[in-house]
Image 1 (cartoon, rainbow, N blue to C red):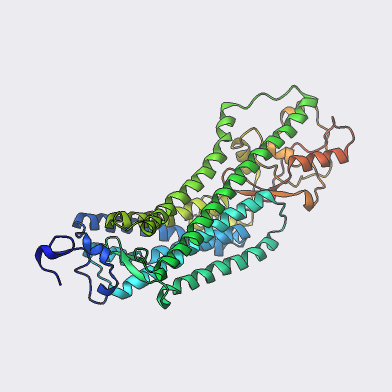
Image 2 (cartoon, rainbow, N blue to C red):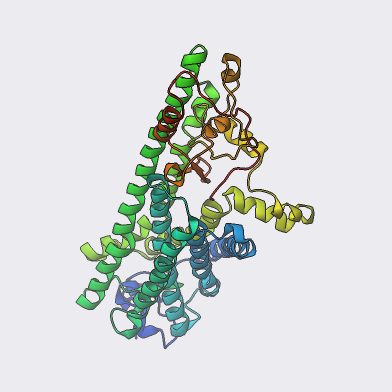
Length: 457
């Protein structure tokens, strides 16, 4: 087509000139203005995707297997985590196409490989984004509202999961039906929707995806996690008032938090900040790239600059199963039972033991956990606290201050490690104690923590 230095890039061979004939009509003229990347660039990209693929596939497949293996994990929150793992598994299942194209230093898989790569990328990417948004909203709902029955929440989550998969599939088929199209991007090893063309058909779908797949989810995720952070701080302050109220009447006021407790005070903030940063770093670079290409004349979009954001998106598929799934204690315990045969008999044990309660006490921020654990005392007989007893109070025993809790007084809280536990707020506990005993200086509840507590992970 071109000869010598008459090529758009001024070199004998420009980017995309060695593509298969069936793929050539899909390569945008914008990429012909750049020389082909160096073999080292292709090799580095191929190695990166080769390393990311098994990490993502193993992590996400592990989450899926653990979810279906243990019925105790099949609650509403974990249902969203499992579907997120499924979306991430699909996202990395087409990575071999990118690896083949990278090591051959050309779009070797042709038009079919390009359309499969683009369709799977859009389908899994939309699903992963919306499931991440649903997880943040579900955690906010758990912290903000009083929820007692996991079955009712599963009824609400199942339609949400179905809507996410159906809408993702519908949007994925739009480029195949003529609204936009799947074209090679960057170094031409991968494909996506056409965000460089100036036609209304291409720009309209790109703008729609920017709003539905980045702007709206971004706002929802940030607002949800900030609301969770504020709620957690408020709950902790109220719980500390409850603990100090006991010691104020029976013993001298409790000492200020130690350095260890002050360190624990920032644990929740760090976790919430990490989740928001992970979301931002995973999807914002690609959104910024698309937005810049829409508002400018595309001169700033180079092959390398267009490829780097896709690497961040694929990296999120590696981190998500470990951050949202395998970091939860219930998933870790089930994984240990799966890998260590001697631990498989632990499936019949209660989900939490006294050792777990002690661990929660050690990781609490202000001497009290984020929520009082709803414990079932071994004895119905309540004991009267003395000044010596109050000095040995634990955060878990404070939870069992009321032996006749009603479901209306129970709420769900998120601990710093992401665990969701049942508990009661300071106001509910104060109302209970005032109703049971007119004398506010005598609190009657068992001090010893029970072996059985109700948890919802």
